[in-house]
Image 1 (cartoon, rainbow, N blue to C red):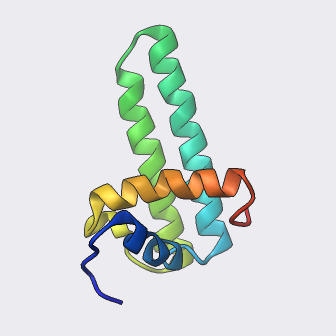
Image 2 (spheres, rainbow, N blue to C red; image 1 turned 45 degrees about the vertical axis):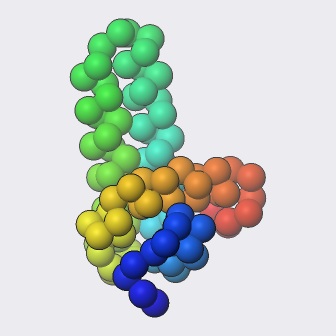
Image 3 (cartoon, one colour; image 1 turned 30 degrees about the horizontal axis):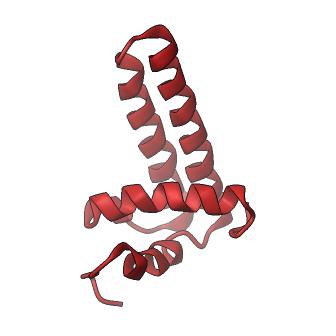
Length: 101
């Protein structure tokens, strides 16, 4: 598949193809949940340092999934914006049952 994408709609099938491993998807989902909790903590405590934790946790869980289970390079390295959006769309798709947990 081409490395250039004209839109997120074109990118998302590629993104899902990079997340075929169930453990990798679950790690992404857990990392996103932890990130949301840390964002809530940042708001509740009015402490922006929790936002750094949210960013680190989201990527740490995802990268463990890629390096140890999916055995590929995260799309973040070549497509940072689309990959970030893809994480949240996949999170939503898992929540509503469109993608298996």
